[in-house]
Length: 267
Image (cartoon, rainbow, N blue to C red):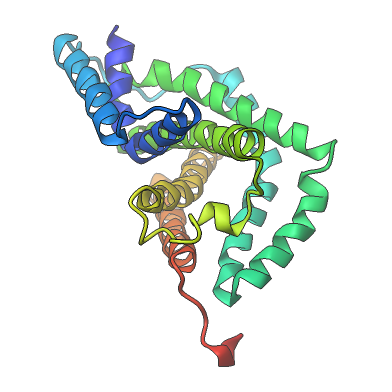
């Protein structure tokens, strides 16, 4: 119960991803209950559980539990890094217009939607979710410093986001609606992210995903650098640089998804 209670507090950062997942699940089951009402009930239950379960204070940890699983988690992440880099680049190209985004995406489809590559990517993503949640369950019940807490929270957000994103793409869009998952699907066309009462939730949902995927990788790099003898102050600066890059990328991608474009003379 202690780990469950602590995980709920850590999971607060994943609120945008949970709320988006709730909306998709509501649509899948054909629920007529407003998302706001369903969310209020679920969130109230989580708050009540957190208040009722006592918290036991423990020492700050410096040793990371589950080393073998952590290594496997890192190895599977390497499989996904290329795909994530492609995906972020694809969205950045939207600054040149939807045609540039679509052309780049269609070229990528020939590779990552092939009968060989797609199952590998899906398997790696699912393993990332599971192998990330296991140490999160352990760590969330133990007091940690800032960097460990950030790593736990960002990893938990990405786990929830990844599970919800795969459900949205494979189950809701492809199987349930039978529609392509291109630019229109991602940006809530025809109304867009800013002018639709449902789709506006996707702005923090996407923005935090972009920021956390860069910053979470930065957290892992920081740990590796210190393990190989780099001074903590230097490793911290590397982490901060990664976080800054994540903020810039998140802002640029979301502005493009909300309709920002380069001037004609720069295209």
